[in-house]
Length: 266
Image (cartoon, rainbow, N blue to C red; front, side):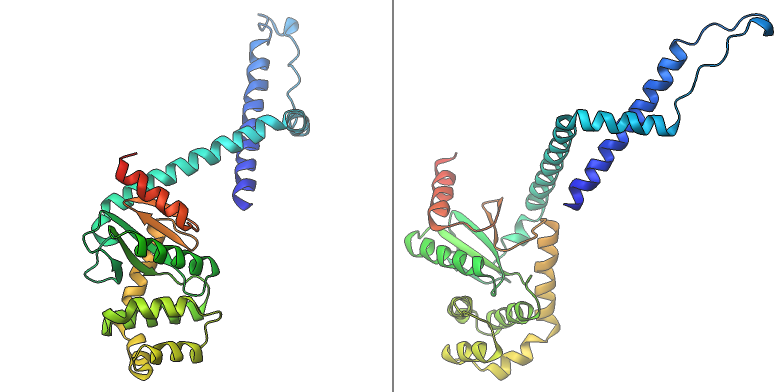
């Protein structure tokens, strides 16, 4: 809403300036030639006052709302296109960082022809559904690789849990996927629930709590957040599939459709 208001005032300002310029042009165009003598000089034309111009602008806006709406729509479309082009450029420039699996948890075929980079908040309801869809895809398609980017946007619990997942990956990478799935399936994230998941998977919670606060883990999380900022990712879930960004939840049918299109070259 603030963006729309700002754009609206920009457009009103443009009309305001245009009308002032038009009034000035008309005044100069129709101004009579000044006589050679003072006695025969024509009286100056009346210049529009601020109040009169404001009335003109107001009447124009009230009588032509469609023009304003269309202008706002065009401006928004241009901004969206500019952002999409910027994001595409970032993805191309940082492709190796985005798809790197030497320092990031992943599941599926290491050499798969389809790479899905998933930004998920472990405490997000839509992310839980997205994780289920990813698991279904992994189970049915041996050519898919999923790279996980724990992306905390829902407060301290999400931030801590994301670091915990990264700590699991750092200390026991083979356990990451099982822990990630168990954590994501929790109805509510609490320290007791997290401890139960960790112990269920044969890990030591006390050791992981030490890892969580280490600079290396915090740096991993910061890099993910900085990458999401560069990609203009503002919500979760979000994904990048073979270089194209998809904001929001993708169900299993949509994922399969995207994969099929990629393989068919569409």
